[in-house]
Image (cartoon, rainbow, N blue to C red; front, top):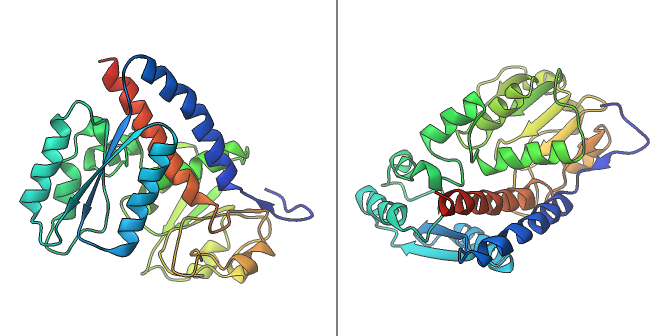
Length: 284
């Protein structure tokens, strides 16, 4: 993407509003059939940041006319107890989506808990099976933040095919799945991580740069090539992302801000997946 007079600010808040406006019509149609899309959110422990995220997701559901069911478990909860709670929700026909807020306390096997979620209710795209389906390009509910990144690129008509995408981060619910989604759209993808040598040079070769490393202002402006598209999936204390926004703004052709970038679209994607699940389960 060629650099123009000024960078294009990729307005995630606007993209999210558009998604939710379209969802409102679908929620109303489901209501006419006596179905209210329901997202059950499980929070283990009392981490303040996690509690805030759960509350934000619940409020977003309610504003759209969806049901938000919060399950609060004690910090001392075992893996077995958490899985038992998940299985109850799996069998509850009024629940269409299940979200396990992470991270969970250290004594819990997070992967085992994620994989206990039934695939047709895995609206956050965290199960091993969901990851595999995403790799093959047919996941019903890919991980929400990667799907949000793709939604922003598509909304703004930013070309993906044939571009070199550099993803900084390799988590199983962000870096890895977004790499696969870009690859499935015919980008050439380089995945970087904490052991990558020559990171700045690699980032500088990217037409599309996805920052998903979890470190504030980690991606510097002098790493970015002129005219690159920068998508910041990070959110750190102080309302800053993984990209040094002010520096990268001088080089990028397009960039997501933090906040009001990828974050709002991630939540809108979660709502969309829940409505999708309600439609599928309601018509089964």
